[in-house]
Image (cartoon, protein in one colour):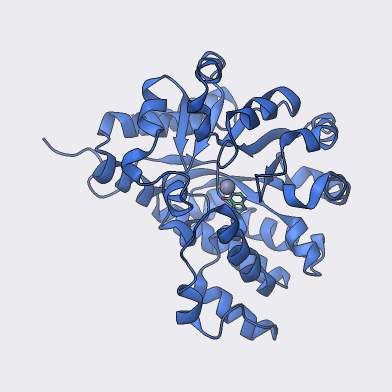
Length: 330
Ligand code: HPA
Ligand code: ZN
């Protein structure tokens, strides 16, 4: 038969994408030169030689080194515009985009410059790129609860520019329990709540994110499959999980794509979607993830369509808007 998505991926919502994790290696070198700051590598070849990871932390070490070159509003404008260009090519129609202002504050970049650059690029994204966008500010869990609380206070002047908060960076050693108070504060501000959990941490971190942080969506969550009671709960409550298959292989949370739990999660009725996480680091955008699921896991066009429908179902959007996107998938 004729494959349904031979050349392009289905229209998709991307709900697990780190804006800073979309920086292209060439841009790292160029921005270092332009800003007169040390580059994290002598040249592009040396930088590229580091794009191979043993685990989450080894990726984060390179990621944070690369981000020291981001200094100006223009840098953040270009970062976000570059993301939109590549996301359009991957048939992304809706993006709820993570960003990490604590990283930039730590590098001496004021939150106002970060926000002006990003919001300037995304303001008109529906018209310029056919992609509706919103921002989710993530707390860096390895900087602890007090720093997260300070960050929430610092973003409140920009409250209307974000739709929610998330939790990322080093997972092991920084469980959801630490962030109960700051999540309660964010909830009181009317912000949506998501968190990375169950990537390297076990299923108990997913349960804690749900019960203690009251998250509406779980980022990764793949280790949930180790706990049958949790799987039942995720299915019954239709908790969205933003799964990132190529990321999981690149960071060795699964051995190969053939071992990935995604097909089983889909078969169990979980609300799972496909996302790219940090695409230049992990082998590509959502279209590359779909292609790999097809070629390496043998997933069918019907399964990929379900994943695309799920991605829109998982959005922070009104029912009628979700329905319209889902009609485009079918
Ligand atoms: N996991 C956790 N933290 C992150 C990631 C990720 O994939 N990317 C950027 N920060
Ligand atoms: Zn992530």
